[in-house]
View 1: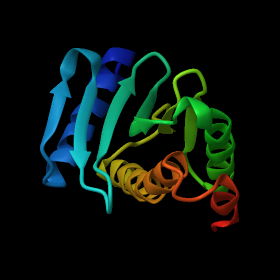
View 2: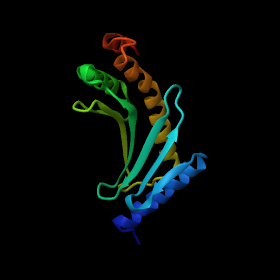
View 3: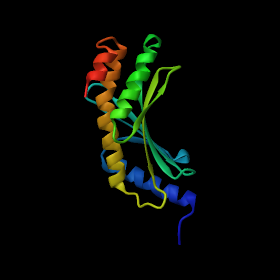
Length: 156
C-alpha cells in the first residue's frame, strides 16, 4: 500500500529530523510547516540553515540566507557575484534579491518515486555548509570593500 502525499511528506520529515539529530546538532522543529532550522559555525561567519519538506512539489528544500545584505551602492556587484558563484557550483545555487541585497543559498532534492534517507540529507547539508562557508566571506569582503568584484571573479 502506497502512502498518500501527506503521509509521504511526514515520513520524509521524520527522516530529516532523525538525520539532523544524528549529526549531534541542536535544531528547531516547526512541525506544522515540516520545517527544521539549525545553525552551525562557519570558518568565519555562523551559518543558518532551514530544511523544508514541500509536500505539494515533493521536494526537500534547503536554504541558507547569508547573515548580511549587500549594501545599496554595491547591488550591481552583488548580482555579478551571485551569478558568477552559481556558475561555479555543481549543485545548488545562490538567489539574489537586488532590491534588498539579500543572498540565499538554495538546494533542492526531489523525493518523487525515490527512497530518501539520512545519506541524502548528509550530502545536502555537507554540500551546503561547504558552499556557504566558502562564499559567505567572499561576498562579505566585496561588500565591505576589502577586495573588488574583479578580484572575486579571478578567484577559483
